[in-house]
Amino acid sequence: MSDSDAKIVFIVADGTGETAEKAAKAALTQFRGLDVYTEVFTRVRSRFEIREVIDRAAAENAFVVYTIIDPEHREYLEQSASEKNVEVADLIGGLVLRMAAFFGQEPLYAPGIQHQLDAGYFKRIEAVEFAVKSDDGQSPQNLRRADMVLIGLSRTSKTPLSMYLAHKAYKVANVPLVPEIPPPKELFEIDQDKIFALIIDLNSLVRVRHQRLRTLGLPSDADYAARDHIARELRWCREFYARNPMWPVVDTSGRAVEETAAEMVRIMKERRARHSVSLE
Image (cartoon, rainbow, N blue to C red):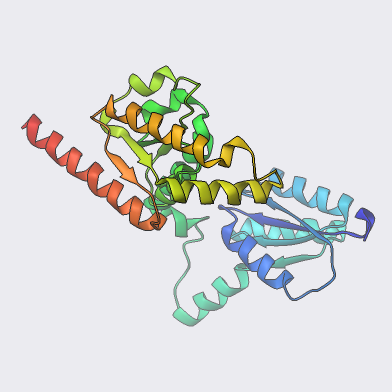
């Protein structure tokens, strides 16, 4: 199917767009063999922004689905779409109005209120964004802002742990350790209680690195997955950790991410509790 045959769906919301995007994509699963491009417009809360979207939809022959709760903005979007011959679908307005009639109560008409009521939602979003920006040694200046800093050799579960903990609202950065490359100086300038040293057994690391090479379509005999090479890396890593005894060493061998993360959270909370007691 050529690009010119692609169908376009604009998803417009006055909040985060999650509700509209999920509903639209659920509907799209009912259509087979279509090349559909979707674009999400979030926090659309002014007539100017609505008009911009509708003008683009008209120019690109896009179908518009929206979750806009403000009655005046809904009416303006429908009017603008009618003027431009743009097809639109209101995903929530009609439902809210029918519920209002049933309950006999005027709705709040507050955009994105389901997330406004959940402060933890924004904390989790911020933590995920932080983890992405601080993954694999990126932006070492972020280490001082992290709740946890994970260090370890390649394929010791640093990234999966970072993302899992981020969804629990912890800001997590991770730093890869390579014997020939010194770690960033920022690692030694931050509160050392934040640092968690990850380790894994030789057999597990050989296995996961071989799997990584297969995934990348690379030769299996590369040093990266060679048993002797990995054994030397692990010896170096353990010696490096031994020189920094403040860091708890967490073994990820054969463990689920959830189990390892729970151990790290427990250690972090114990350290914070001891610190609080020492300040009293």
